[in-house]
Length: 412
Length: 107
Ligand code: HEM
Ligand code: FES
Image (tube, each protein chain N blue to C red):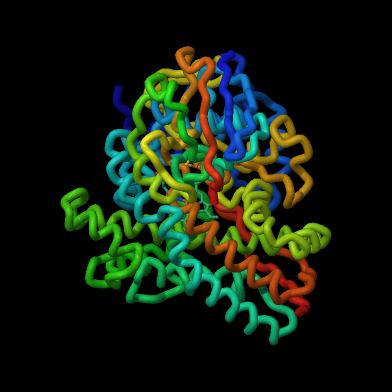
């Protein structure tokens, strides 16, 4: 069967949901929901194992077990047809697809191996000094300033300083890195205002990003060089190496910016948890895990049914787009008991903020190392983190990030 | 149910009962067994689920899977020929009675 462009909805095949799947007349990409999603998450979970959203002709899952299962079931639910609403089989994507995120086995295995080697725990440990020194210096500088806007001053400042160094980029443009992330993540949503606004910068940013990923724009000692080494030994072509370096820039900046901002938000809102962390710094890593669970920086990503299959016993037709609401799953009371409480001693092993299965975040060791450095600098030097105004969220089709976070860092 | 025995570095033993499809890592997490962290949740990204399969069970658990070797290089404790990432050992009927030994440290 073939579909003309005109019959597609958001670039994918419209579906007729199996009987018994509840339909929900809602726009999950409404900015008000994106800014404050918990009520939407709760309703999604309450409606059933799988819900039909007529507006986009998609299925959506939000209960923990089902979401984890669909998101990690790479045999039935493909990534190669895009992890957003567009079906790459039916419509050309906005950029050449990622050769790690947007591919299936067996192609995925080869590129994944290169990336997991380049981003191993050992490699991440090697960046500890750079990360700690940068975080200490940044926090020292901010402590002299009284009240700060933590998104720009800290959450964006830290990754846009250390990450290009870790990758070994010779070209530096923090704004482009942040805006490219916004494009990549808004692009997985529908053709709404958010996506169009983010895409409006593409003409300027995409060529800069592509150029910055070339071998001669990278130092010999960074993550980029580790990837190009796989071109030298024949595992990858030169172009593929460039594409994988592009993945660092797509997935490695906006996400950690969000992780840091959300961590500061959680700790400024929960002073008792901040105090607990100050008392027991060994909980730094566990604190970040709880921030990830509690805020799900990547809130929604999708899959495409590669063949007729099922979700929780309901038949699912080939070509169905299924959005997996990681944020809803990480707040499911059936899994977590008291998910609305931010508790740094929870140790939420198994949360799916980094995904699950073969596509599970390959950059997670770097993300953890960055957060360890930032939280480490804060608990060493800061006595209290106090809100200095309302936090403002920055709606995105896939990322749950702050736009503004005014806080006071009260020194020790 | 499939019985798995976890032998801690100090020699203490804990038994757990898992189901088909559980992994040696996920079962340990669900049962609150110390000595396996499983930070990455089984995506083969962390090596904090390192274990040594007991000699008698090497046949049942089989060889390392693709990619395990690389990640084991980041393990905190010594790696030997019986070292596995426990998130990559999926329980089967043949593994009923499985014994795994846990390393001194995982981070
Ligand atoms: C708090 C920070 C981060 C969060 C919440 C996050 C989240 C995620 C999620 C949910 C996935 C799974 C996507 C899927 O299954 O479709 C993923 C994959 C990925 N992440 Fe991250 N990420 C973070 C940081 C990073 C960093 C720092 C890098 C790069 C150094 C990175 C690179 C990647 C790549 C390349 C993939 C694709 C892996 C694959 O498909 O095999 N991420 N990330
Ligand atoms: S749980 Fe992370 S490698 Fe096994």
